[in-house]
Length: 435
Image 1 (cartoon, rainbow, N blue to C red):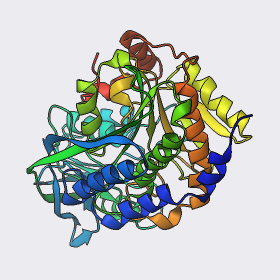
Image 2: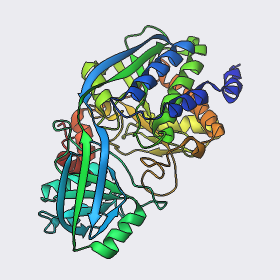
Image 3: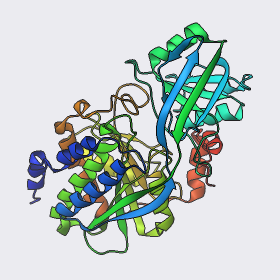
């Protein structure tokens, strides 16, 4: 008879949720900041306390970015905005052009020397989501003088989110985020007029790090269970991605107690510096023997909604495993067999390592409260967190079973899928195309 007492224990556990509260109460967890360092240390200690072994921090150097003042000035008004991380410290003036959604074809207009404003979303009929950095580099390529990123979510919430490329971490033109309301005002009153955008910031050398801990047998093969520790400096970073790192801690507690069921080692790796270009996971991927990784299970945005969402990157066995867990527990799950070249699974999946990007279904396109002042703990529920911890723990135990085989893909197969799904042009312009 299968012992399911761990399920009841999970529904009574405060370990993961308490760690979530610890993370959000730190305050600023921007990559390279003292707050991110505190999050690393608190997470390392939490993993050790729940029974994972060899808990440690692997440090690495990175390009830092520290926020100063920013402004959008139009006529005799100053409009509220926030700088996008890794914007350069610079000022620019030019004619304001509202490109609406900012689809690739919209940038074919004459944008030389102009201030370009685009939405943070795409229309419902469009076949893929267009990332902020992709829109930024279309603007750069078109010769724009500055970039204004307009939130599509109402509530006076200017969005943040980094620019820059792996080879040039600091962007080429000043970039700011404005709320939906400010964006509407700019478009109504000032389109076609000269506006100025200014960003003041510092770009020091900085240090981040990845946390490591393991449970299970000392096998050469392992499963990576990951998240990211950092968050944007303007908010608590509860949903993005305090919940992911808290879920790593909760699963470490569960799997340490279920260690005798594991046939494969589980390595927990909360990464640093995700929000500024997947720096921590790229650092780890550079040190990893991919043939030893059975799968990567990356949490980014779990517990934001009641239904877990699994991007499976066209790995059939991962799709079946996620659906199977949902069926066994009578719990709906959403499985998307497409490529998602964002978040910390990607430095592994892009080379054919089987991997999930695990989030949760939310209403509407885009990030919702994410990357705004409103990413706060009060939006989340402990009930949802505990339910999803049960499903995710069972998923990882199943993947760790010696009888569970997950086929790999060649990099060429991944590249072909990216091409077929329309991701390639955007990845090439942002410097993220590795093939």
